[in-house]
Length: 81
Image (tube, rainbow, N blue to C red):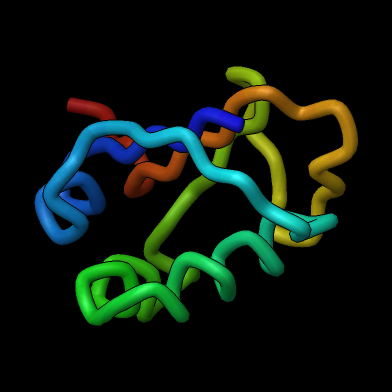
């Protein structure tokens, strides 16, 4: 699946997107797999309350299933101006 990173998440990980082969069944499991890779992922996902996730461009929760999902995007909460 494609995993996209936006704003400071992208800055901490150092790439805007990547293809990920995963055995994760939920977003939370995917995050744990990514965090196990190396420090930059640990830094990006250190505080999940500061992150939002979208599955195939629909806002979702970290306990959501990844079944059939082609794209996961991680980004900080958006603020209005």
